[in-house]
Length: 296
Length: 265
Image (cartoon, rainbow over all chains, first blue to last red):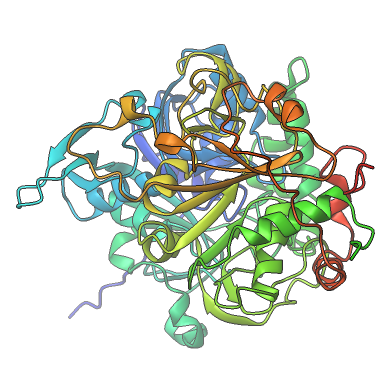
């Protein structure tokens, strides 16, 4: 008799090696909060291109645009929060030629839900009477019931892959996100064909190590195929209760957009050849773990 | 009775607090220091029924002061993270948001997306439509404008319609726009509402020392003025005390250029 092992642990580079040019990639988190930046940095170091990025966008959008990885962005917004306008996203928009689908924040959630539930669309009133309707090329659908109401048919946004960062995971793909907000990570996970989660800590079994935090599980492990250990993996975005966002690092990143050759310098000096380089230049996990939490 | 010394920012906070009067048990969201302090003041005085968050994910019954404080300085009574906002507050109609768009037109249509150029190639990319389309078709909205001018209150239509207003040309046949409920606009000069014919924007009150002509000159479309508008009420000593407690670092002083007095005379 053989006893099977069940192990989804892998590396960031191996995950990115599974992506293909032209894929639609969903990125969890929200603005500059709990973004899977270690996975994004692995993506920045790859040769991938022509990606469609689906996100409540933060610095990952600007970085991927600056690195020439992106053909289209589907977003509820792109912002660094305390720095309201993402500078590289802004540059790309104002240069023209970037394909975008600008959505109301709730519409993006609705499109992910439609994909997760394997429906072609979900009806909504949101977007009607605004320019989002024409810009998005949306169509309407009439209620088949007596009311006959005309509604916007929000098309499903199916993802080839979703990248999500959490506090803890185990080898089977169970995960826990401990911060105050869960964002929309559950819908990104369920809308995707394949999901990679990175985690500050990966253990053998969460039921053995942290059973008291089971309510911090955002989506079931059947939606997770790849588990990557990445301490500091959300930096420079926030990861409470582990660490806050690194405002100095975000400011330096934003400032680079105004400099000649700013992105190339940022990529060479900060992103570097691997995650060990990144963490070292950011001061190491010790310094990251001391970053204060933002107050709203 | 003479009003105690107060700044224009404090007068605007009181005006913003009035927006939530008799709204019932809904989520009050004020975006930016003055609208947020207005919502907090309303909850602390005439509208204890309002629901409100700590600015992040928790519902609180004692409004949380703005600016630096202890990270855990809140007593949560409930939980309202971002994704529950749509399920619990926005698409259910249980919310009143006070927002600051970059342009407003005579139909109450707001722009938050971009200025100039086209959607394909904006001259200046701003925030994008964000939650405006869903907010305006589902729940009450008001606006706060810290610098009333024809750049904000534009002639014609806004460059990009991020939110639903009362423009008949944009009312898609067969769709339900009954949730559109624009209430008030508070600016550094006056308070307006949508009480004119066909929801036209109308002057409600003028802040101390401001004239009708001054407001008209700063507004890019015709403004309805019925008779002689009253003066916007000044803060009371009790309101000023609560505002000071809600804003211990005096962030309100940074919102209006030069932090002018609330009395012009």
